[in-house]
Length: 258
Image 1 (cartoon, rainbow, N blue to C red):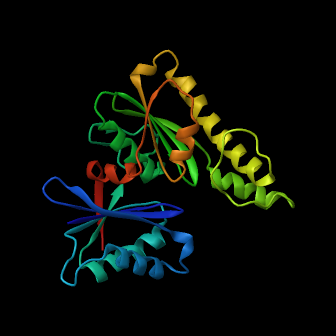
Image 2: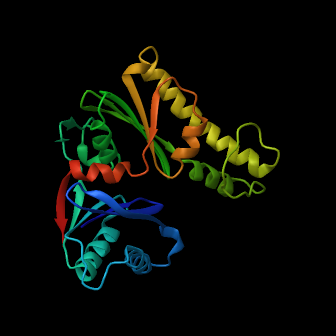
């Protein structure tokens, strides 16, 4: 049994793999802001894993962009509670036949790298646009095993929060967007920021895929992936993969952190 963790700025995703084929046995998502400490977050994670008294994973693989302090705390918790040493994914110049496009590979977020590695394994496409719709919206371009760099813009919730911060009267909660102009301030904000996100992704598709749509695959992941995907109007094959970063863990280099 293998436990995989994807720790983002907003959410912690987990899944348990088992069996000879490494099939997913269980999975879940925790919102980090809902817990007043990392230890409270870890306690809830342990509860959701629902491990038997004598059942421990043989390994724990982690993709984290939460920072060194969080990672140290997580590694210590894994060691104490699960009796294994956590293995953290790292970005390397190349892995599994894919080469990093950044001049300094260390500056590429490990979540983006793992998503690219996972997308590179999809059969039938050599050219892939990988879009992560999380706290930020990132686009990474993969062409025949070469990561060509990408783009980063604020995510849907960050754009809503920007309105909270810089205006005195626009105070709305982020919620599901609808197609068309809003008929209230809440609708106008939520529909507008999703339209901005959709327009951004469509613009990247036009720039790179125009005239060669059949050669490209668009893969979306992240908390807002389904909302953005539903509103897209592009002539490119697309998939939504909720566990794309976790899928990339099997293809990356890992470093033990005890």
